[in-house]
Length: 404
Image 1 (cartoon, rainbow, N blue to C red):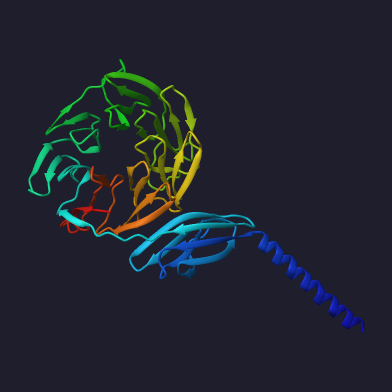
Image 2 (cartoon, rainbow, N blue to C red; image 1 turned 180 degrees about the vertical axis):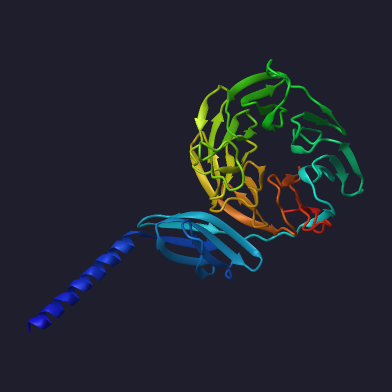
């Protein structure tokens, strides 16, 4: 009799424990109500803390229960795909609409590779892959002119507009690209020494020019040079907004005893904004930054790390996640306009719509895109990009356009 009583009591305890565990589990959950425009859309959910996506259903309406947290929601139908980052609330429901758009097909316009493109009409200007010549190419006539030649390898070419740009070569000599020519430019910022040692630089469409010289940050505006601050990071990235706000990213080894940054050395970013009034505002992200780019209206900055790709507004302090894995390779992205960002993820080209918080697959790249700034957008909204050669012969090198 005692054994039966004991067994019955144990069963009751197990039932109560199961109910409690079920309640605790449900308390950590929320609901995601999803609508699509495609009855054949296959939906998957990827948790931020996971590396494997889970299939959650097919169709125009799917309701799923999941642990509260942040997820990447993706809808796929054959070659088309859309995705967005969603937050499943604790003990609540969030409703989202994920529209799938038509995927485009890139058209080849040239059988060679190019860097740092600028496009007006059918005219494309770019830095060649040897980093020593700047070309002007018309893909209708096939005419290809050399604008600048015999340069030392150029670290980066930034266009002020289609006619003008600034390049700094590996000997730290700045060049002004103007029309179909280039000429060295002189920026005197210090009385100590004559060397122009530049870590990084940036320009905006007004022709304002910000750069780091020997650890000092300067802004050149209408021929007036102003010192904004200084930083002695081993690697430096500078990005200039249209309103002259500077985003500064200093990359340092995690170990303070290391004096150079090499492959495999752990690094961290110290990033901040410098306003035109001299105010210094820290960027809160903890990860080392690969690339950053201001939106054309100077309100938001897109920032890519190995962990995620986000858009950040330093005035509102609002961060919006786009992907969990950054933009790859090399943080490859460009703004189309203030509401649309192009980015590369595993050689797939996506267009992110800021107001909809949704990424739409534009196209699969026909080759390798390994450029940090791979896209150019013409005034009529056509997107241009270049692929790299896949072998020594140059197979796969080309320039393409997409009409989204």
